[in-house]
Length: 311
Image 1 (cartoon, rainbow, N blue to C red):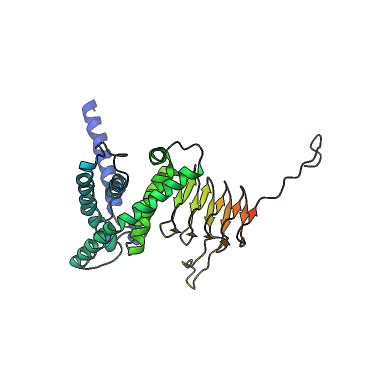
Image 2: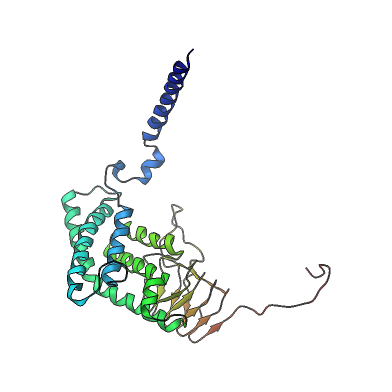
């Protein structure tokens, strides 16, 4: 057998094996069908489009910082208007994809609702902008390393994660499914800060460093709250329904105004941390804390021993 004949035979075998693998991959398994929308026929949200939407909103809220166009007064209205038009075009399509995800609704009905929700979101942008600037202000007043507000906008993960969160929270409160979770997970992957879009976070929210922070879905956070890296505002336990599935009930902490929580502290369960309180680092808190409290971990016990005695 010649070399050419051997190569043709090998290619034929490879082709058959590849064809068989592709055939198996094309088949929709029962497990896959549970995860798809309308048997794979409905359009799914686009992560790339949602990433572009958030980027445009950053340009709208912080003109001149993240785009290459000058933020001069004479052109600001034009640039912001252009960006808003792009957001409208992209967002109404993505909201429509979210609305049909896992459902079987008439196309006309979905399109009308998506258009209405998009306009409602644009009308909410001034309030989102106001809140984001209070977050920047809080960072300026809480970190002595900050030299200017512009430094916070350019450099601090607080801005990136809060743009994503406040956009996602607005969409979630409007009733948009799926998309808010995608948006906050985009920020999670970029910053290491995990904020569920269902959490309620008031103005002047401050995150220093931030890596490893987790804020659960039913958290309620007041004004002028500051969190350091590694803080978890999580659930202590879950309530299960008769079908064995966890119930979506309030299970995360309430953090009142002017609370500071230092690094690697876990606050778990539906408890309340009273206003003007401070929780030190590495605290495990599962009970209510009254206002104006200082909570610290127990003092370490020191002793002297030799050759392993006492371990």
